[in-house]
Image (cartoon, rainbow, N blue to C red):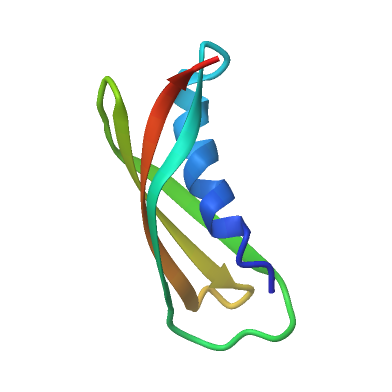
Length: 82
């Protein structure tokens, strides 16, 4: 399992709205691991909850190939000029 999908998913959700004019920097990231996962397909679903002028708040979920929730995350990201 690649837990790197959660922060990447949150960042990419914001980047779909602000790139290429701006980039992101992580201010805070909280990840809750809810179920063990050692093999199989994993999918990250992320959304922007609030997009402000300087700060964005996102949520992301990792689900396995049967749709069970494996991990959930919330992230605060700073918008940065390129």
